[in-house]
Length: 399
Image 1: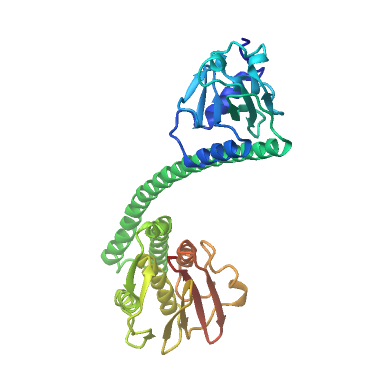
Image 2 (image 1 turned 135 degrees about the vertical axis):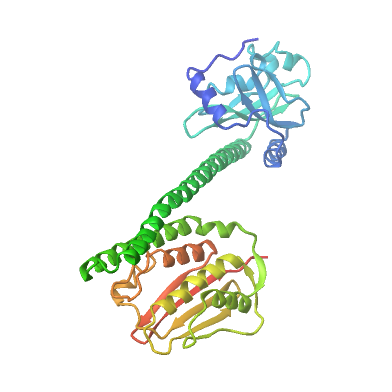
């Protein structure tokens, strides 16, 4: 018997094998179906997905064979991985001096015929083989060999798929951890920034009240400017924190809820002035999506429609429709409209429309777009001097 020689790239090969994290894993139907097909196509009682490490050959799938591994020095597959570019075929091991006295030949499982196709990684390393075994001498036709090669390609596809899925899981875990760290940092930073800003605003109010007789008009103007800037910065800190948390609501379970109730809750929260009319569907319309996300989207859009509306009688219309795969909503107003040169950037982070009498942070519409897209929808805006309409869709849950 001649034991298999060690490949020249053995250290790199073993490292590549370890990357797949496949050794000693449980049986999987995807691999077992491949070995079953290999035996049926080649007419052999045994087929294996064999992976060779530094001490053994281990079987990820073992059709027709009860054992899960054998020592490497006895492994036919140990020879096969030394020729990764071609099939390794032993028609009759009893007359082959490499295997004639091999215990796997002279005793169970009586490996007389062997044909193995190396499982080669994209880096060019042979991890093992997809092999078929018979208890009698045999030859495979060209079609059988081609089919065995195709099945070995599928084994590598399965291994690659699992490796990439694990990499994605690791990446997702790292991103989640980074997100949590950033969220914690944002919360701390927001608190650390807001506290001195609040102190500045309070001190300005106190100073102006205590010294109003001593402060001239210019001094009052300067202090009011400092106060306004501090308040704007405080709102910006709040908005950044809100943006960092905006997609968390998507991870809440979707639920059935009544759209009219959600709109009514938003209106109640905003407390619009008596001269503002808000029309919305009053009929009971149950939708299945993230209630929190829908309320946050409507809160931003309706609030903007109120805040930036200079019409003496502001009117806001909320409409709803649905199709097979989406809910369709729109929020329209009769305000001054958005300049055409701002429409393409209106959803960009920190973008504001110059000339509005109310100063914004440029974050609200970015949050809206982010939430809509997370809910498998799209949002568009159209605007004229007679008003603006934000139209958006939300993807329905697929049965």
